[in-house]
Length: 593
Image 1 (cartoon, rainbow, N blue to C red):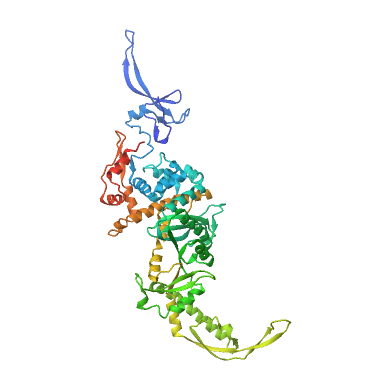
Image 2: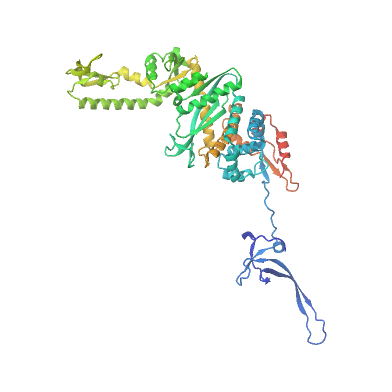
């Protein structure tokens, strides 16, 4: 009778004329024929014989009220229903474009070799598959990987389920192997000569419990969530990710910097090249400790000075009246002026340079907050005057009043203060201190205007001498690290970690890093295409173009081939890596079920 699938799709109602044998097998007569009696004579009759065939088995054996059965091939043939074959491991149409580009881009950049040297060939194939999934699916939720992999050409020989992927991230991508890869990759791509490295961090939310590295920090989107800090170092010249670092969510940018500086210093030594490395960082990384670390390691820097530094006010006051001159104008989309001042950042430290820049854009952005600050101080001063009417106040108690308010005062009654004598013995003496009575105030219009103008000041500290124009241009390109974080969180699924162990978190972080390398390589090398068409040559749009290149299965021969020629856009993208239709077809010919 053959195998019978006991599934709901193979369940049918009992047809008319069907009957049951042995309380379970369903039969139906297929033909009737009359058989005459062998006896002769009046009154003898023949009988009707039946040819029957089994069409299946009852749904519930032994039940008298059962009127449904599971059908076998006999019944399916009789009713004209063809039994479909089991689905194949891979879909009949496979996306081949993205993996073909990744294979060539990975080989040309040396990424394949660096991964294989650290993890092995099979593990490298799995890493590339997961990176391709992140780029294509714009997600890092691994539960959906098997469904995605079924209609994509893979680097691996088999489709892995999410259970295996979890084990792979936790067990196969160990921290020691990851560190080996990070060092190898960064040394090979450090470059020569003067190199600017953009350094910044972002936080990744996590709901994992009992993981040391997951802690509450200063998350911008939701401070109540636990997080992991992720630092990236990007080569400024082309936006290529060089290395990354995970740290507990509670660790601040300033505290994390020495470890990254130590790693970069080691890269410089391992490269054996005459390189001049400079880190470009925002104001969250500047501190006396970090400056000493970088000076001692021979690492240059271009750092944004925080407005809370006393040096910021000193420099701003010294240049605000002269900086907006045609002599100091900087070429930029924004109206900017810049001057360079020699400074030292800590006692005994080397001479460095303050690039003082006035920006019309920053002035417009900060003007309202300065206006609010002045209004608050005005209210505070008026309340003070009202509360201390007729009261004598020591001059030192008025230091909090901003210089852009001129006090109207009259002499007050002197205050006698007892002070301890210096030298041997004991004793005290009285000192008379002058006081004033504050009876009012008036605005210092010039002082208030200077306060507004100072809000447009940006100060960058550089370890090496450069012009304000050079510093401005170098810092403007720092957005390459911001673009990397935007790609990771918007297009590669790094808005949440989605793992439950620290080992898996490090493994997933590696895959994200590899995916970000592909994203950066694709973006950087196609810049010429975006010069005339920004819309169709964004990274997501180009990935969609590559995904549309399919390898379709011939159901008669089982072989695969392209059904359509490559489009003009696809050819433009692939040509930058020397990939043509022949390359794609050769990769398709290597496919097998």
